[in-house]
Length: 149
Image (cartoon, rainbow, N blue to C red):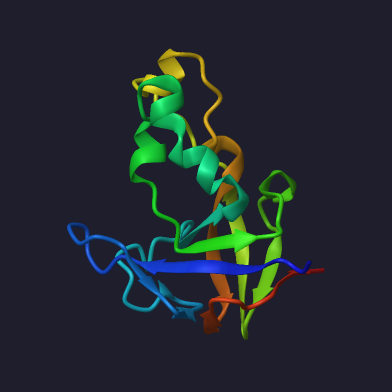
C-alpha cells in the first residue's frame, strides 16, 4: 500500500474548532491558505500518523489522565502508510502537486504534562511532525505521498 492522505483539517483562527476538509491549498510563502498557523516559519503545517489515532484516543481511559498535547493537538494532515519514526528534519514529501519539508519530527513534552508525571512515553514523540511548504499546490484526501530524493 502506498502512503496517502487519510484526513485533512484546517483551523481558521485561534478560537475556532478545527474543521475537516476535502482539500487544502498550500503556499510556499505562507503555508496553508486560510489556516491560523500559516506564516509560522518552521511549522506551517502539522502531520499525524493515522495508524496511531486509536492509541491516542484511548489514553485517558488507559491512564486515567490525558496529556496536554494528546488532548489538544490537531494535525492538518493525517497520513496512512508512513512510519513517522523514519522522518528526519529535511525529509521532503511530495503530496498532490505540492511538496513539503519536515522541520521537526515529534513534539516536545511539557514538564507539567500529566502523562509525563506518570512516566508514560507520549505518542506525540513518535507520531507527529511539523513541516513547511517548499512547493505550492493543492492536496486532497486520498492523495499519495512519496519521498523526494
